[in-house]
Image (cartoon, rainbow, N blue to C red; front, side):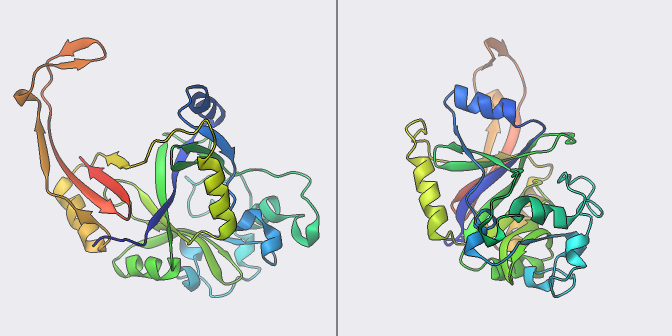
Length: 285
């Protein structure tokens, strides 16, 4: 089922050290550093008070989870790594997350320090949300974020299909971003944000108009899976993917492959199914 109203917001990329890759992207003119994102929690004057972060079993029903209903004091004192040790936010409590991102901004005062959680890179029309975590055993793409008219409704649809919300940002009764665990095949998380507010639309247009940003158009990503048939069945069960017919590749039917300047006689056989999820092609190999 094609999701015509799912608009790609960004692709999340986790790195051990963001400075070297960000410098590489810019020096090679692949992409331009555009700083942290302009989203709801970067502009406290648009709202009243800090946002809340929920992980795993603390995610409230508002976001599709099973945690407590209200944003109580109990919620904001949770250790964010308690139930997910692989997620290292570099904060001891969720209250510290709020304080770092929003503290001091309330009432018009600027924070004395601002610890950015992301350093973003504009590559053509694609926004890469670059997050640094020095404890990572591996680096790579973690999630694709879509702007949708109703993130709560889209989240609930996937929960009804057996998915869980692993991470949620909320503010004043509204979801800022929900991360839905769709890693069963392909290891890629899908997240939802509300449709872009005007300020974010202007920020995005400004980044894309930068003279060093190329006219590249992001089409999709390749995902290697262990079992193609199970992957197709999984995504079809979620009713979010519009699959194209299968394609096959057999290296025996082509000339020797020139790999890095040397001809190699390798035997490669693969099957591929490409699914459109919103406007993004997921090429499962």
